Image (cartoon, rainbow, N blue to C red):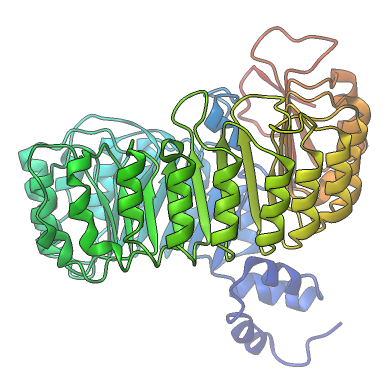
Length: 560
């Protein structure tokens, strides 16, 4: 098929396509469109850094200005992946420095980033504007100082849940005196001391950046310092407070002057007597993050009753069902809710879930840790929140049955899959039989990510999922009775998926070897942190790739 107009015209038309999936679809039309799409693309998302090589990237997309890339599997967050597993960003930075000197934006997640990588970023990309590091490791505050000193056009610096070696606080004072372009700064989870000199540097930075919209501070920032920063940045849209537990009370006028504030993250401990100082901004908030705050139920109820416009709420489960019921009565336009556990037992129950579904019909995403659950509550939830796209339920004890009937929770999850036609992400919990997986295969036709733990009876459960979920991209399984027959049921399915993770299941090295021989486009990695067993594989990670076997795998990773 030949293009009916010049490539230059087609490239200008394709610029208006911003969604990655739309662009991927366009590239499959014909060779001319494939070439034009590659030349016109400016942003690229790489869901697995080993799915291709840096050389593949620069050949396919020669004009990239923004790169989003993920490295290690998600189970890294739970300690299942060895620290030296891989996902080193340095080779990528080397290649991009040679081919993309105009690069403006780099967002990395679960990757190893050394100080040399940060120094190369700072010195190679003259118009660099945004750096986001989430759950990364391998670097120190010296590397961050390279970024702040040399990236003169930096607008965004996002540091979230990283393992950073603290050497000095000079990275905060490294911004040049002529620097005024900062729009977003997040160092809420950076465990570094902020002394007087560091704070003065931060204060001067905030004062000379009129475009600053997002500021998230770590626990070293006191209430007095927070007040001074707020007076210098009245146009903030998103704020993350520092420590909220000193004896000094933040005057209500300090927050009251922030008329543009829409998102508030109270990152560290809160003394209940200070909660009232948050009230002046609550009326216009659309996002409230209390996931790191132990707040008594009554104080949470009083606070949330002032937040009628909330669309996103993160909270700990110690607010209990009563706190969630108050949220349901107040936040009628809630779109996303995450309820995190405080202890091992859990405080929230099916009553909180039911209340949220009855009061928040526009809910799209939920992560819900709880003590107990019933099929009836999930059926009610599915009926009330049919537009749900992300449903993740985590019961604190494994193999928990319906709290009332003592039956498996098959029917509850079946209702979620049946009623929520747009469901894209699902995490299972409780006592589940193969019937749940049969429901998933029948009804969850738009499912992209499925997380399974301590569930299922036989290999049929996994086979139902692989056979029925045509859009499945990520499958995460741990502590389930699935063996080689279940694994090999997806021998051709895995080509269309990003990855498969299985740990503490019943798969064998022989089954993994057969999978690797049958599908050469897959990297089949066996992770054995202990001596390899001939009867059972400890951990298995399977992903599609056009780069072949990786060269940086540690000894505990065997690639078949």
